[in-house]
Image (cartoon, rainbow, N blue to C red; front, side):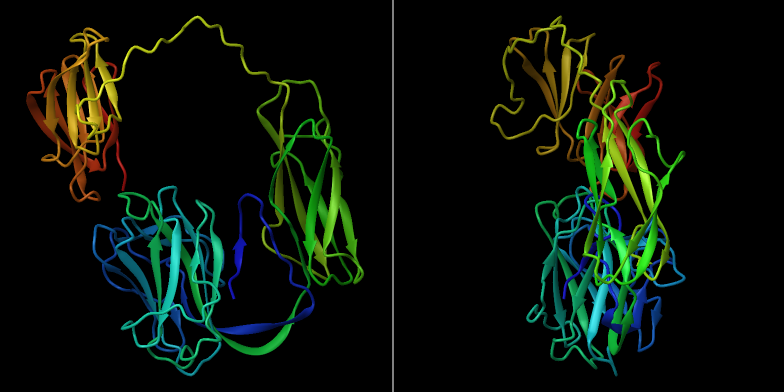
Length: 459
């Protein structure tokens, strides 16, 4: 079984559990990560709670990837009383490492593992799942209903891996789950996947689950000239019950009665109610030039005979259509002159270009080749290489700036989570000095008076 529930984000679908029997579970192991130390984590991460032995997490493999904590974590799948706290962050490059989650299932069966997960923009785009019955000697995904998942950027989702039909997963002191990382960005030098609230449970006797209700989406965008918005609530196995739909005023909302028509109201359901309930909200198309998007917030409150599942609030953005784009003046026209390849062999890139008006020279960076190129730009129709500086001996190059005859180059450390440096040259490319800065320095610039250099550091 694989469940993917989004706690917050675009097009949120909150399923609703009705008055039917579902399987309750006993918590065997739990990692909430709220006591993780700062800095790089090299030791195995022990489970924060266990009733049979102890679980551990390691990040095995090669390369510069490593584990550390991330703040904040998330409350998705948190077990009372733990809050968001910290999460666990396996950093890139992650395609040469595997996250191994080992836990005994001794004396228990019908094993189910759940965790909240997301990724950063440059994090690995795919998580691949497998398991081992022999303590990690061999792995397989045989019998898994799903063997991979694509995490959503900056939005935690709940992944459920059901091992209840896996022969050997029950009553096993040497059970291990492996999460491998893949996709185009897994081999990158930055980015990461993130995990929080990993639980391992075993099946128990069946017990009833209360009926519940939820917004189908907690983030909706509607054009001001749409006329109406159809807001959908989802129910499963509805029973006799009610809930208040509350229109939240300021400071929750910036839109008001001049922008939409809806009042706080009770919603009443019976056993004959459908599994969806639609509310039609008139949207008022005014002629005022307003901020780019006004919004109002709705809340489900005071449930009777049912529970509210997931986020109790929904935000509706109204996109204003009265602000017109400026008409171009055509005062500036650009004419193509030529292209220039600093390497002369199409073997480099040209990411950052800065111009020194005093010498009429360009200073360009190539992260692929690791070079700083100095180009004579006195005749834009015939640029020429003055000098090329190999920055690889310094650690590489990410950014460049020039002012008052001084060229400043941001250079990362070969071990990119360690401190990098700024290397100074004159406009002829002669070395002046080198100063240590933070990890992965980038976006370098001089202050207006030319006495200081600023870098944007990561890590």
